[in-house]
Length: 263
Length: 191
Image 1 (tube, chains in turn green, cyan):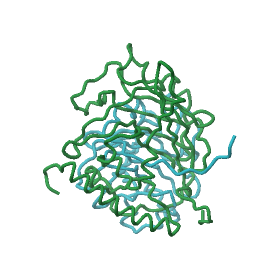
Image 2: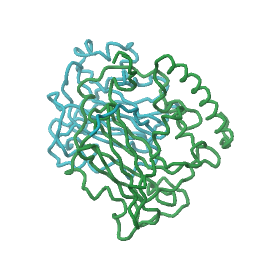
Image 3: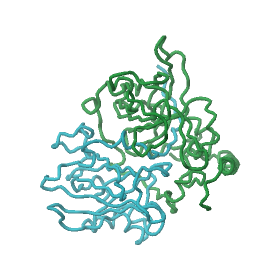
Image 4: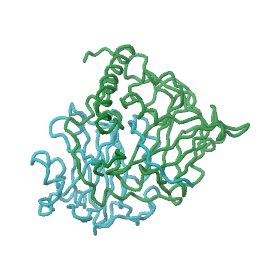
C-alpha cells in the first residue's frame, strides 16, 4: 500500500477484478448445488477501511443456543408512532424530494417479522449528516435530523416518510462519492437475524464506482439493496413512493436447495 | 392470501461512521443502574489489526438474566431503571473503549453462561458476533460446545478477565481484537 490515495480508476479496476473472479467461482459453486455469495466480503480491499477491520481467521460455525434463538422485544412503549415521519421533527419542513419508503420485513421462509424494531438514519438532501464527524461542506438543514424508528405491523409492514438523501463525498480514495442511501437497522425474531444495511435508489450512476455497495461481489445479491420506485405508493401532490422488502434469515436458512440439502 | 414463499436474505452493509446521532440512546449501556446491588461492569477495548483502538465501533449485548431466563420485557430503548430486558447498546469512546453495566447472566440451556456481543463498525462490512464467558464458570466450560471445539489460545479470547471489585461492583474486562495477534474468535450461526 502506498500513502497516496488511489484514483477512482484504480479502485474500479480492483472492484472489477474481484467481481470477475467471484462470478467464475460462484457460477461453478452454484452449478454444483452450492450457495451464491449472499453477503459482502469482510476482506474487501477496495473499501480501505476493511483492511485492518476484518478477522483473518475463519468464523467458527456453531449451533445457536437459546440466547441467539430469541431476540429482545420492542413495542410502542419504546417507539412513538410519530417517529416514522422524519419530516415533522422540527418547526419547518425539510428541504428535498419528499418520499415514502414502505415494505415488509420477512424471514427466509417468507413469514412476516411482526412487532419488531426498525431504525433508520440518513443524510439530508444535500448529502450531509448531522453527525459531528461529517465535515462535508454541504449545508445542514435545520428542519431535518434524519433519524426515524418504527415497529413493524402484523404483516411485517413498515412505512417511513422522509426526503430523498443526497450522495456525498468520502475519503476512501480520490473523488470518492457514495451513492444516495438510507441506513437501516433491523431485529428479527432471533438475534442471529440482526441486520444493519443500506437501501439504495434505482439507476444510481455511482453504483459501479462505490466499494461499499460493490463489497457484495454477487450482482443479484447487491441488487436486493435497491428500493423500487412504486407509483402506486406515490401520493398525489405530496410524495414519491418507494418499496423495499427486507429479508432476514436465521440459522439454517442461509441457502436452501429445493432438492434436499440437509437442512 | 398466497402462501409465503422463501426468499433470499437482504445483504448486510457497514454501519459506517455516521450512526452516532441515530443508534446510541440514553441508558443504552446501562442494563441495570450502577447502584444495583449485583451490577457488574462489563467493559473492554476494541482494536484493529494494527492494535489501534476502533473509536467508531458500536457494540450490542444480549443476554439472559441471573437465572438464565431470556426476557420478553419491553423497555430496552426507554428504560425505567427497574426492568431488566437483557439488551444493551454502547458506542466506543475515542479510546476505543466501551462500558456496560449489567448483571452476570445465568446459564440458558446447555451452554455455559455468556453475554452475546455484536460488533458493528466502519470497515466492518457484516457485523461480528462473539461470546463473552466468565472464568469462574470453568467447570461448565469443559462441556460447552463452542469452547470445547477451540484450541486453548483461541478459547481464551472468549473469556472475560476478572478484575475483582472496582468501585463497588465486580468488573469484567472483555477486549475485542478484530484482527491480528490474539484475534478474538468470531462466530457464524448460519451453520
